[in-house]
Length: 260
Image (cartoon, rainbow, N blue to C red):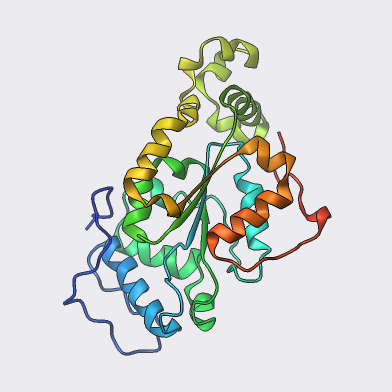
C-alpha cells in the first residue's frame, strides 16, 4: 500500500503488536501495512528501549530551507555533534513524495542507521536534511509528531541567483531549468516565472504550513544572513532548540560547506 500521504496522522493502530526479537539486529516493523504505521512502530520500540528518557522520533531533527540557504552547512555542523547519529546522505528527499511501508523500512534501517541508533539506546538524535523538504510539513508530522524543524530563510532574489548559478554548473547539466537551456543567467532573472525554484522563496506560505502542522515551539526560523554573520551564536541557538548539549567545535569549524 502507498498510504504515507500528507493526510496520515502518524499513529500506529493499538492492535499492531511489536514482536519480541532482538530489535537492534532485526527491525521488527517490517510487516506493517503503511509507512505511517512503520514509523509509529519504530517510535514505540525506541521509547521502550530508551526507557522514555526522551521523546524519540525518526527523524528527531529536520534541517530545511530553499536551495543555497545553508542546508549543507547546518547538516555538517549537527553531524559533528557527539549526540547526533552520523549519516552519509544529506539530501534523502524521502518526505517529498508518498512512500510505501517497504520504503519506510529501508529509510529507517539504512539511511537513519537503525542498528547504530538502537545500540546507543536511542540516546543519539537522528537527522534529516533536504532543502526541498520544507514544503512537506505534513509528511514529517506523519513520521514524527515530536519533530523539531530548523528552517533558514535567505533573501529571495539573492537565493534565486545563487541557485541558478549552482544549477548552471556541470553538476546540474542534465537538470537545468528551462530558462538556462535557452537564455543566459542574467536573462533568466528578468522572468522568474520560467524558474519554478523561485517558489521555494515564498516563505510566508511555507512557514504557515509548518505552523498548521506543528506547535510553535517545535519550529525554529532564522535568517540565512544572521547564520553567516554569527555562525557560532546560531549554532548554539540551534543546539539549544534541538535539545542537544552545548558543544564548542572551535572557530575554524564554521565554514560554508557549499558556498555561493
